[in-house]
Image 1: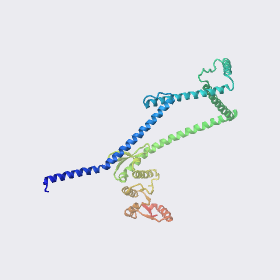
Image 2: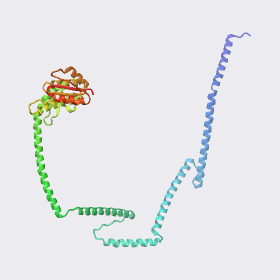
Image 3: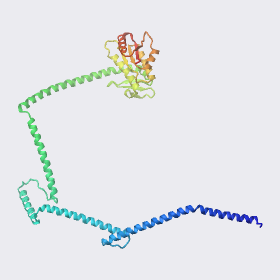
Image 4: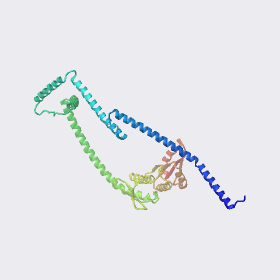
Length: 389
């Protein structure tokens, strides 16, 4: 049979849609099964929870019935009633325990006697206390009535024990002091000796005060005279040593504290707060000026230096060596060092006969050559000495 193509196409499309719908249903089968399983599990958990709740509610109602409490109403009301009963029962137990403790205390007080015997003993003691109180003087301490006499008695006993200990300590200290006291003649001799020592110490103190005053005056004069000399000596070499960073120097006459002026900012800075290398160089120049000032024979004192460039960087080291080289034109300078940079500078900058470079051998030869160099100081304007060990 011949079929219309349009009709055949429509039937084919309907068949494809049906198969596609069937395939989608098949694809969702696993998802639906998982959802169904989850639903069953949730229903089972809900049923188990409902069952547990019913068991708990039944237990609450049974407990309320046994305690003759109302069992009508929701479970929360029953639980609240049970909790209230438990609180009241706890208070009752506490009251019973307190009553039992009081009963035991009463039995201890009675000690086999009757309550009437105890009351009679209490009356007798009150009468005795009144008699004792009447016998006390008018200014005696009177104890007020207390609601807790046992506590008051414990406090009084503790105070009595404390006072007894203090009395014993004071008595022991008094006895010890009495035994340590000398006899009257010995005390008089000691007083006379102390008076003589006091006069001697007073005289010595007067002498010391006078000496200190004179020393301070001498120190002030020395500082006043020395400050400008040190300032001039430092100002001469400071720009070279500091690489032009510091241009002026000031020495305080009161304590010889050194301050330098920063060339770039014009700010004055304490020399103690500078970098270690700059500070060492400034104090080296200060020692040179001080050494020259302390010479009283009119001669120029030689300088013997050991590792004075240890804290300087390469540029400062060369500047300091140049300054020392210039100083060697005015006085003899001997420099000991292990620094290879200083040795290299000496090889390039020192020239005989004005200068001399001595390289010491290791071990014992070092001492011999150093002594020889010291003996030849008159011929050594500048002698950097380097060792290789």
